[in-house]
Image (cartoon, rainbow, N blue to C red):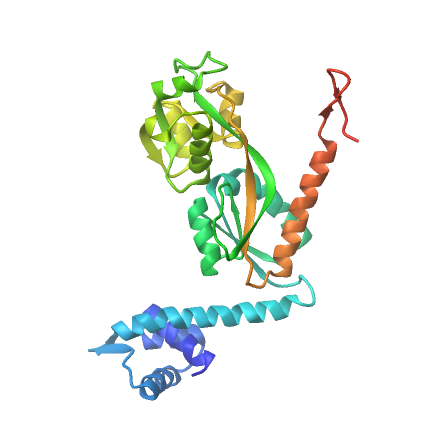
Length: 315
């Protein structure tokens, strides 16, 4: 069995058509048919049903397709590793990030990386923190960026930045004039939250428990799959929510959202990768750039003087 046979099989399986697969691969139809026939004869297993002039995968073919894709993907990863050994002149960086990070934090870092390494292609996929962890485990993405915790022995997680989670309501909500709320009051409003599995949801529920409030006590009227949908529902009067300060910033600035207490602990943004898989030079370069940006921001940030109640530049 050769990689070429596997590539041909995948092309035929995805198109369910010999001629179209041959055109996509730049081969003759007879070469494609011969490769499929050789596989079936060698292993005495039918991979396709021949129905009239059409074809479709057999049950064995569907199982083999998953394995073939995995082998070809690993071969592509090996080729990429060799290409990148010398320089960052070619390559693809596969990233998956949670919604908050992908929409509000990561773009500026990707723009800076693109300027520094214009020949590296970046492919970003968005999912919640649970989906990101699964993508890293499956090898679908090389780097993942999440807000939640990762409990996977095969993964390495490293804090890359921090974020503030805030409780907000619409300006017409009864809590809008309350800068601080007793934790016991949190059960007295309807809530709009992200879906279970999102980093925002899991961090907020942990914060509630620390405040002595069981998450099950909240009146959750809506669970929505995006930050934008959550904000829109809150602005429409659906209740309170807990979201990233990065997400809430435009509404707070416009006065359409109001921040209320209690204060929630800061949460970590983490980068995760599979400890047993090769980490490309592109991935290493992106992480180095993000860490340097954080270091420079920390150095430039003002700090409180221990002796005076005033702000002084950080040294």
